[in-house]
Amino acid sequence: MEFKDLFSQAVAKNFRRGDVVYRAGETPQNIYFVESGLVGLGLWGESGKDHLVRLFREGQIFGHRSLFANEPYHATATVIDDSVLRVMSKNEMRQQMKGNCDLAEKLLETLAIELRRAEAKQLTLSEKDAPARIAEAVVYLKELHPEYSWTRQEIADFCGTTTPTVIRTLARFVEDGLIEQRGREIIILDKKKLLAQG
Image 1 (cartoon, helix red, strand yellow):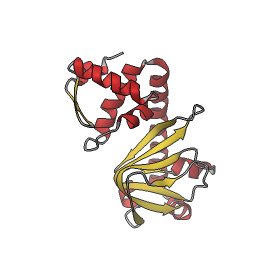
Image 2: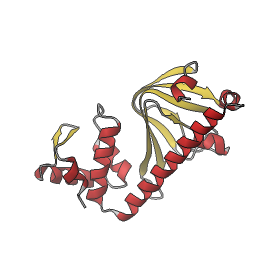
Image 3: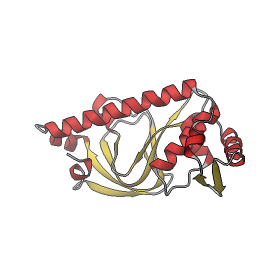
Image 4: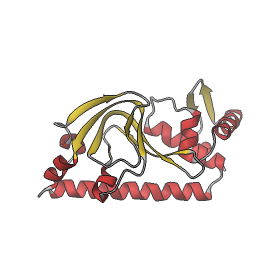
């Protein structure tokens, strides 16, 4: 069971960069499948800073955790790169799940993978210094969505630091011959050494 097949008949909606798909605190009504583009899940910290806690690319679903937990969305989903999303209502999803063991297994697998990634990210944020977190974020984000030019703010939001820190650290990576910067575009020159930062 692939999510692409499951959502093939669901309504397709176009979203532009910056569009909000849903906001933290809203009651979940739908599950979303990314047909193309990129969507970020943002969470406001106690400091008032937005943290980019998760990213969803082509072929992934989002909005499911809160829906299955029967609780309001804990974060805001915002389109990072123009996207086409397939939208399935809660009732439609429940109908699809009835007697469909393959779908139930796929959803459990997805939730388990997301939990593992969240735990790994939490460990990185708590144990590594800013240069190491920024280096890992640059590699991860470039591999996640190679065509997209990540802003310094987005990198900062993803790895839990500030934009000025990202700018300074990237400049140091350039001096060390680890990356090149062409406008917003970051070109990784030495991935192994970049990941050894910190």
